[in-house]
Structure formats: C-alpha cells, structure tokens
Amino acid sequence: MKLEGVKVIDLSVFLPGPHLTMMMADHGATVIKVEPPGEGDPGRHIGLSQGGHTTFFRNANRGKQSVVLNLKEAADRERLLELCDEADVFVEAFRPGVMKRLGIDYETVARRNPRIIYASISAFGQAGPERDLPAHDLAVEALSGTLSVNLGQDGAPANPSIPAADMAASLMALSGILMALYRREQTGRGDFLDISMQDSLMAWLPNVLGPVFVEKRAPVPAHERTWGGAAFYRIYRTRDGRHVALGAQELKFVRNLLGEFGRLELAELAERGPGPHQLPLVEFLQSKFSERTQQEWIEWFRGKDIGFAPVRNLREAFDAPHVRERGMLLLDTDGIEHIGVPIKFRDEPARPNLHVPALDEHSEVLGKG
Image (cartoon, rainbow, N blue to C red; front, side):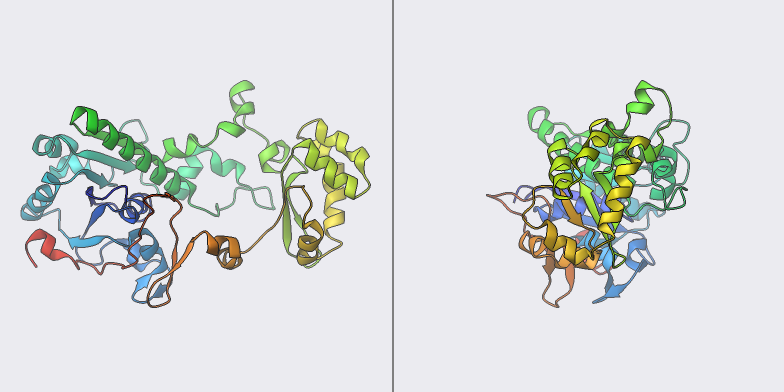
C-alpha cells in the first residue's frame, strides 16, 4: 500500500483530523490515536452504537491504535514526545496556542525530529483576529458565508446536510501532508502545516463567486445557477411526494427533454442563463413532474440522454448496486457496515482494517501495558 512505513501520531478528535488519518491508515500508514483519559474521543459517544462502537467513531477511526495520555502531566507529555521521535506525521486539532502552552508545539517537536510533518487543524487557523473563537462545523459555515446560501423552503438559512467545513479541512490537510511527505524526499526536512476549516471551505467556492468578485455583492441564491435559479439544475417534487433532480444544464440536455415534452419553445428561457426569467420553465417542469411517481419517472428517463436523477435517501444510496460494486459499503466479520475507501489505486489498493480500537487498547506502544 502507498503509505506503508509511514507513522502518524493523531491527537485530533471529532471529524476532520480523525477522518484524514483514517484515510492514511486505509492505505497502510500506522496511526497511533492519542486520546484523553476518561471518555476518550467524544466521537465514541455521539449517535447510534453497534458492536460496541458508535457509527460515527468507527467510520473515522478504524484501523488505528489507541493510547491514552493525560497531556496535563509532564510524564505523559514526555511519552508523547518519545512517540514523535520516530513519527513521520503529527496531527492535532486543539485551539491555537494550546500546544505551545503544553510544550508540544512544532518547534519543540521538530528540534527532536526535524523530519516530522506537523499538521494543526483548527476552525480559523493559527493567526488572524478570529483564531481563538470556539467553533464546530456550523459556526465555521456561518462565518464563511456558505450558510447564507444554504436556504430552506422558508428562505432562511438551514442546517447543512453535510459537515462541509469539517470534510474540506480533512481533505486539504491530507493533501498538504502528502505534499510535505513528497518534498521531504528531496530536502530531508518536514514542515508545519496550518489548516483552517474556514480557509478550506472558502476554497471550495470558485464556481459561485461571480456576483461576489465581479459585482461586489452577496448573491441572491434563488437567481443563481447552482442554488435554484436554473430550471435544469433544480429539484422537483413527484406525484408520490418524493423528488427528482435535473442536474445538467447543457443546452443539448435542455432541448432533449423539452423536445420529449413537446415544449421546445421554452428552451429560449434556459438559453438566456439563470435568473427569475426562468420561472415559467420551472413551473412547467414542476407541473410535469407532479404527474408521475418517482419510480415512474425513473422508468421514463431510462436510456434518455438528459441528466436526470432520483433523490435517494441515504439507505437507498448505500444499497444501490453501483455503490456496492464500487466497494463503498464494507461489512466486517460481524456484519457491521462501514463506509468504503474512495481513493482507489490499481496496483496498490487500500486494505482497510475494519477493527475499531477500544480506548487505550494499544497501551503497550507506550511501554506501560
């Protein structure tokens, strides 16, 4: 596997750090998860449990080794530094300044191990006037502006369906760590990586910033292509109360569908781009989709080159034959389900270890077991 021989020390909890180090473990890295005494990572206690672990925890921490250290105690801090002496990567997600106060900051660790790649993940980064604000994903999305365009049916900001700031930070941190590992092959030295959840999320916005950068204004979501201002990039309700999505705006798809419906004259509205002028087209399509059930539309669209998708629920999505064939639903020896591995190499595929570590299961790593 690609990361065999890479040793990672992971002090992070909840989602961004644990997710990125789990991806490294899936591809062969040895990941030592350092947890606080007592209840360990809070993810162990969030949501439904099965087989002795929460779904949340096992899908962000499988294949790791768990050790408990009390970083308020000098002896345990020294044990952590000893682990770092032989490590390639160090990941932490405390508030800025905490690691410095504990004497486990990058400068201290790098003096002992100049090759280490030290990644700090925080809500707002290690510098800036908002760096010390306490925040999880929702607050970061609010301050990043993305929540303002995530609107519910009432037109007000709604809780986002996925933890986009968390996951963006996870992927940015993974990318940065892999860059640093590659560069270390040339220089022999590691580096410090400052990952902000806010930075990571805002970097995901290049396709929606036209009004923001060109016209210096906040976008009106209902008028924009991505958020409902385009009839062919929109969700529609079906007769049975379910939903379907049109997810392709290329004019060939517009003409293909409107031709099937015998209303090619409406294509002119789509040709003018997104905006309120498309409302008659939206209303026509909503009227059409309300004539049949979701399943009937699935059958009707079969074989047509249009850009259509039924809105599946999450259970349906993980049960879909394509998802199963792609290996995105894995079963362990107890029949418990795990999310699969999205990074797929041909020659050295991941071999995820589906064992979920108990708290402090691997204390022998510290020489105290």
